[in-house]
Image 1 (cartoon, rainbow, N blue to C red):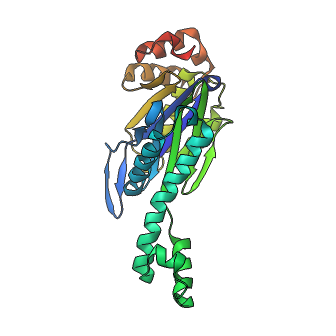
Image 2: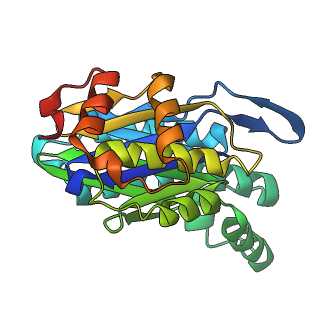
Image 3: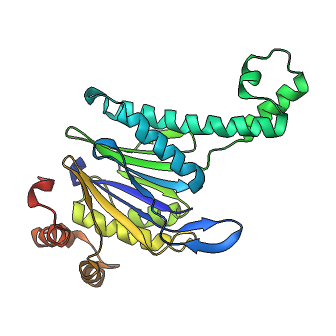
Length: 271
């Protein structure tokens, strides 16, 4: 599993997203800490994945393909949510088809259309379908015109995150949500303060051993995606000044300038 976090901030003018990079492989007791889990999606959107990589990657690929087909006026939240659900159901349908063939020796088409299937086989097929889960969670963030969009999913269900604006997925979800609650993270908080809270929440989620120490971070605005990588000196200073202390001073103009300057982000990006 993993940790994936998406935070609405700046009163909806920005989204900060992050994910660890640990891949674990049951039943092998080893891990790969260079497994990327943030994906670029069409027209400036970003997706984070958690779950079984072999299923997550086809889902995010299918989602990107479906989003590519959206017209200019079809990029609002209801359309993105529709395509997320379609991508999830498409990959799940493939899993169901494989399971039906393995467990019942019938195809999906036979299950749907063959009225001659004996009742015992049909009952076993229904049980197989109920037991076939899609071990995938997603966060999808981006902008349609001036409106921020933050969606998250668990298996086949999709929700829009509006308030407080904190979407969290993966095995470290409880630890991360507890920390974000402690910090009172919400959509009104500044981008730089939200970034600090996200990094802290990710660190706290490492209490779950399947969450790794290496992470990726990005900021999304209506102008596009900005990587938030490196700059350990800035984070070290913030840890020293604000770690386990009130973080409200991060909303200052000085800390905003330090944040934007550290990552080479134009000052008008958040205007």
